[in-house]
Image (cartoon, rainbow over all chains, first blue to last red; front, side):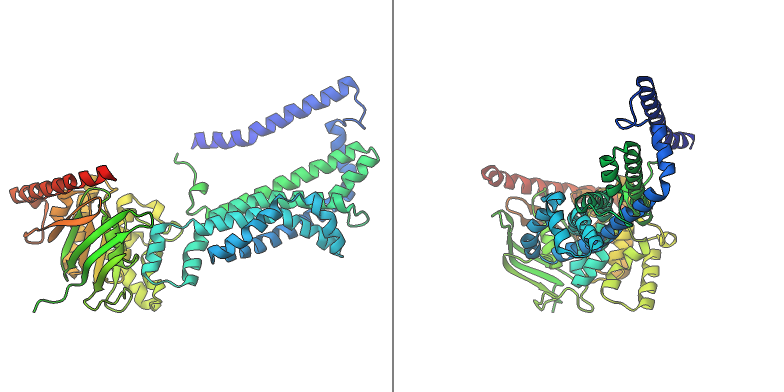
Length: 265
Length: 265
């Protein structure tokens, strides 16, 4: 019990200590060497900028996060549908899987301009770009999971003359859940990356400008402290998204799956 | 007139796609109410034979008749076949009760009838108070009992068991053997049991069939003419040793026969 608590403390305290030391070193180096803020701003200045520009930056964060979440939702639904289609027959999978890989390996920066030209609504175009980036891990993990079914259980279902629907719903889907959640974790990070990259390419400013636009603009204006502040927000958003997916996975699997079980004390 | 065998295999061979001959010209009749055990060295096709009897695989040549009519119906009323594997093969996400009622659910048994059957069978295998537990919360022996309960819940006519207690420790295995015999004596279903253990075969069976490998075939059959119930006193009796000795010699002969073939292969 005490050891478990100490383990938890270590998990939180150790990274926190590293951050503290790094920030202190950074602050000291910048101050001592008198490095100008347009090259490397001190952490304290970044924090002050983050606070001063909070309305602008949080608004942009809302835009970017909105796009990433919409993309993640669409990628999840579409990816699962595609995976369900794949496991219906080896033929469908063999015919279509190469194209799923094609979507995965094509750099989003290369196809984003096209998507932005083709899709009239900018927001929809950005979401679509992020979906393209995020969907592959969902498809491949869910497909793998739907196929990773215990052979013995499959035999029992055959012996009982189970319908295809019964086998899918009562056996394949539950077996696939751990794999699906693994894919979801990766996809959550990719959706955010996709949203930011698409914003960069689109370069849309104005009222609904995302964090990428703020970074772009701050770079041009040499407002490096604001650039750093925007970076901090993107990183924090990514970590929060990941943590949310981990929590979701824990909620769904904690009762039975090995990956979520605590080691015996 | 003697009643028709419950399953009859005539000249059954099974060749894999790779060309390996798993079973060669098997002649076997399983009679109603008997406890038939298959023993033999690994690679003699015991599991393949069980799969064929279950109707989960088709013979390459030869014919299998179930209930005397040659129809490969394994799901019809009063003609139920149940299967127990070496591993418990339970769904890790579902409670014991849900696992045990799986065959009933797949057959769309009305809820009230299914509930009653599950409660009854869990009581018979001594798991009544564990109905709501998940498989991982139980010991290996208890999981195996749940697996047995799942097989018995449909009140099968034919119970096929593929080394069901092989992964358990000796004490648990012996206790489960005794429990299995009690259930068998009470309900008089037919059992085809596969094991590596000559002691287990002698203790349980009314008849033991010896198999040889490369290619897998039936070479011998020994009746065990001992009254039931059998208990631990039988295990240490001179008669038991006699049966076991005869059977060991037979298995040794079967293994020796296999040598020239396997040397060529």
